[in-house]
Length: 121
Length: 113
Image (cartoon, rainbow over all chains, first blue to last red; front, side, top):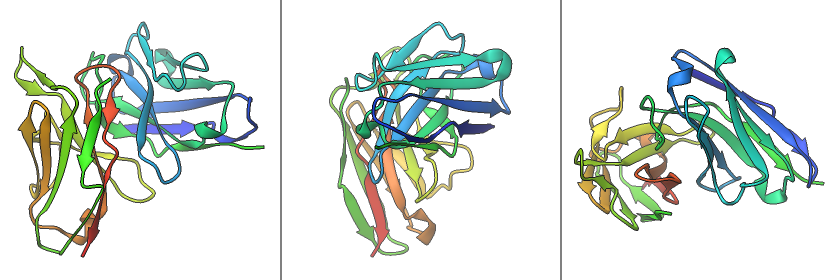
């Protein structure tokens, strides 16, 4: 299993960014995928996940209305569209795969290396 | 939301000794229908993503050394490292997946004394 995130970078407050995670090594459409972030020197924060069929999405209150999770099962890809970015969104963003098939309550047996998002003027 | 609280926040243990990390959930994460606790433990070394160590509160993930063990049920859980090795220096997190949103403990930093 491999997960490879991309799309991070420096963005001004109020700006937008789209993160991608390309997966391989498993049947992509069978698994819930999740974005977890980690602010510098801080702990892990779940921010969003999407079920394998893409029909159900979940968001943390801290990002609801600003971030949108999506997936393209034909390309084994996960996305996070981030808008109205704030300084407190500065973090490493990890994509993570659920250990179980067809679950809406994920825990994570595979993680990408993460992509750094910095929100600063 | 279920709040996960770990103790201690940091811990220093001598090589070869036992390390114990506790995790408490604000409500039970035991699913009655299958008698499973929806609780996992992760290890995160500096500059690396987290790694799943334990799931169902006490089942070791593939490739995890048997010096790592998990125990507990309901709302109180423990991760034990029976014989600390230098490579076990890391931050450890518990996580519940009993209900959405999934939530993590704040982390416990484990160091060598």
